Image (tube, rainbow, N blue to C red; front, side):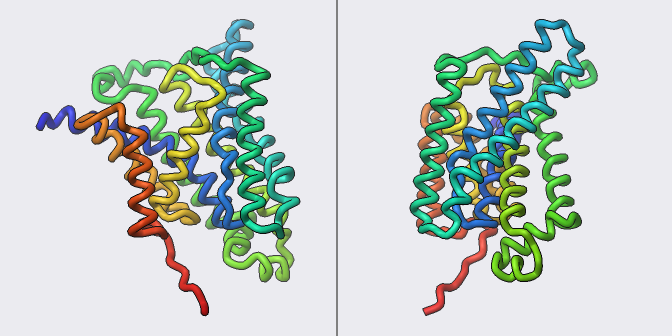
Length: 302
């Protein structure tokens, strides 16, 4: 076994897992609060990438400074995706708060398809080239053959986002309200917490992390279209289930495990069966450990 090849696959998997983690956080946070899967979350990720492409293209034509373009592309992508996440919650989930779970699930799938077709009609069904917003760092040139500037930026950005999210949930007022709502919505409401606002804030925070992931992966891959959120969203969902959906550390761990195992599978076995491998993991997890690696098993009362 070539150690260098093994190390490159590991770093590639770490990069892939970092992107999954940014998307999986949205799934697991929403599930932790309302115990439902937001299947439109992958489209929020796609909208973030599309917004960054439009902003970067327009500002590039106007000859703006590259650093300003990068900052504004990320800011607009996050703001625009948060607005969509907030709207999705208000349209697809809030009216069905007390409805059976199946109703909310169908509503989320419908919203996912609507957003895909909306972007396809408003933009184009074709793939669009996405010029990387992240330049090649000169100080990183000696290591660029192992891991590129874009990949190391993805990993570092993901770590920073995880730390900020952890601080938000642990120390801020809204984070404490999220934890209280996740434990018991009725008791949280009795204590004066506005549960509806907390749920909306959860969608907004999850959309922001998805937007960052969308822009970063677009920089890495170099092209986007209206459909990129579907498969990425499914992979992130698998990662969230693998780690234990509803658990933020579980979502991160599951994403890294999925990303690294996918990278080794495609590197040593069959790259064309990459997606089959991911869904096989989902099936195995659901059969043998449905609560995931760090998930909590709630006993059913008879």
